[in-house]
Image (cartoon, rainbow, N blue to C red; front, side):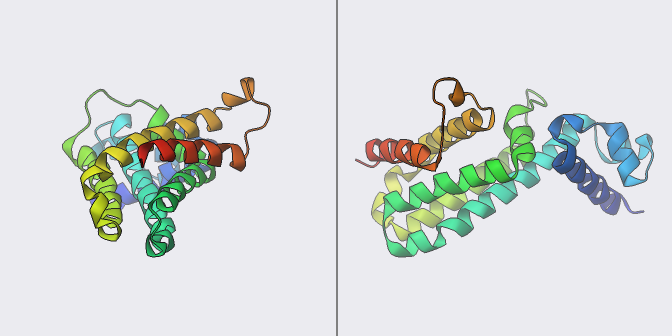
Length: 193
């Protein structure tokens, strides 16, 4: 099997394990077993466990960015910036709930202190594409879009983390879509002044 083909097989196996068993079930032995290869073959393709997780996370970022871009297309045509950002929030939250194991691996499984340039580029490029797409529809807002999107992204991330880890239920019995929508709306009211 070619190295690129083996790499893809290993990543596909790791994704399947994560999807079914969760981010904590990922380990080199299990991946090798599901990939029908030896441990040595895995280490010939990837530096270590962290390298595999980074590649999985890069794929997750692509999925997340794609889901957001697809979901905002109609809102961009409607011409209401606040609605675009609300949709970004809801798309992000839907993604984190539908793909919670991948999302948790992306944001809650620390792999290493240093992130390689290819990975940093993937993070920045995806957000920049979303920002540019919004900027094309709202050219007057281009100057402040980066700041708004960056702050809003952190806000949505926090809501996702709290919701997925059920931390808000400690103080609030029911956290439904209307509760989250009010929070996002209030946040946007402050950001879009």
